[in-house]
Image 1 (cartoon, rainbow, N blue to C red):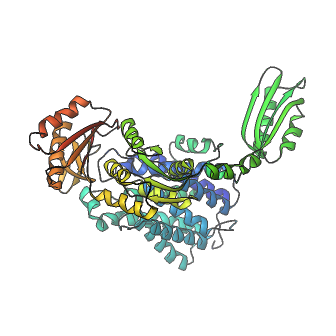
Image 2 (cartoon, rainbow, N blue to C red; image 1 turned 90 degrees about the vertical axis):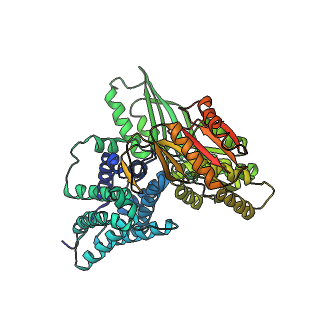
Image 3 (tube, rainbow, N blue to C red; image 1 turned 90 degrees about the horizontal axis):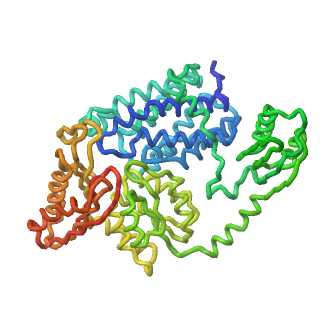
Length: 545
């Protein structure tokens, strides 16, 4: 049994089952997040990352382990959301490197894949923390190394991945005190073990109890729109359109399925429209002649149009170069009002996202591509988006500078510090320095019970955060807001500071004005500014500078 191997088809099934099991358990994984804010949670982010990977694998129509792992890596990278999704994409990027030129996968290859993936994930994080999914991946890798030395086959190794992962999860609270205080294991590690448990289920022939998740994964449509970064690698280059007229007398609707099956095998982006006496066909294919030849079985062909998409796209670089600007700024925001403020300050492209929906690496990459500049400054405005922005910078062709803004107020301060006449390094320094001069606050509600700093927080409590840390809790938005603003101004310890209040979509300007009316007599030298942020989920964003 030592020569047992996993084929490309089985590896594909393992990934699909892992993705389906992750989707089924994403709510439970979300619930393990220590912070009770309504954020783009770990289970959701990892699920969306895996769904992107699955679609890429389906589109690639793979037969070998190498092909599957390459598609897995590309799809996960493009769809990676949040820190957990980016780390997962790096783990799978290591799979792709380790499984290069492999028809099938044996035990040694599996160990090398997990080991290389773990190393890639650690390198992607600037300050790796133990007690996270990085630890879980590392401990799984170490357990596989020991098992391989004992002569285990690849099926045994899959068992060890799950067993070692579960043991590592139990240890995460001991390595990361905040987990222990909240009474949970690491959510990213739980997501990773869930995927690997799906691997084992596929190997064992075990089905997910409720088949709906698996069915949804298997039937998810493959991508039929190429991203901007893929236009020079078009696999199906000829856009082919034609009509089949004067259909054979014995033509029936079952023939449409035969036509559809044949054209699907030689192309993609297939559309077939059937009327009483004709069929219209649209397909992207490397062999338009084969498509036309097969269509002749059902009648005569007419109004043929074939366009070479590769040739169309060869003109793009020259056109883009001519229109290229010296610099551009891209920001992630949520709320129309905040987006308008950002644009008024000079932001060239807005990516809608933030707390409830972390944008993917591809979302950020496409925004960078669209602004078409020699240097692009990216403001993530959320700590859970910085890693994705950094990965997008690595795959972009232009120079990308990620300013590590963790909040909307920090992003506004950074863009206000930008000066178009200064060089890249000086602007990067000015923008980064501006972040440290801002105190950021936000008010939202708790989505789950938890314990932080020995304080119990109940679901539905109104929580106030200063620079990402919960500093006050009460039962009402206005009460929490007043307490939070006082704490923020005490920290600033300056009489003439400026306080900006962005009220959310659930609040009104008159209610925000009540905060100012209460605080102005206490702080007569402070300038208060009220803006309609329009952000969802958060009652207020505050900045003190």
